[in-house]
Length: 164
Image (cartoon, rainbow, N blue to C red; front, side, top):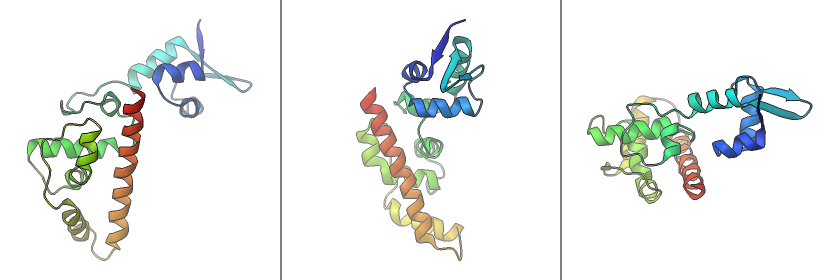
């Protein structure tokens, strides 16, 4: 039976060895074994993990061009994907995901995502949306937390497109 080291498997998946080691510790890679300080991953377990972890899920918008985004390896991708889908279908334009995509649209477009349209004045609309949905809570901190997540996604996408 052929075994891969963490470094070899991480190179094939284009992820960090630390992330793959965490997956091994959590038991997400079938058959992975810790020998001293070295994780060994059987080829069959690696292929099963690759098939399950990197599978393209049908129903995602065709305009998403980044393979990593389609595979769901970037932080906060679900919300971004939902926002792009809602902007494409022109429904629920004032939803949180659609507003976040509209705020990040200039940078997202620059990074290769195809965004059909954007919502005018998305920052103000997002703030109002959060105020309506969270009465009595400090809206400014919620607003900032969503923007931090958007920025985290944009940075991860920038790194992913640089490597590709």
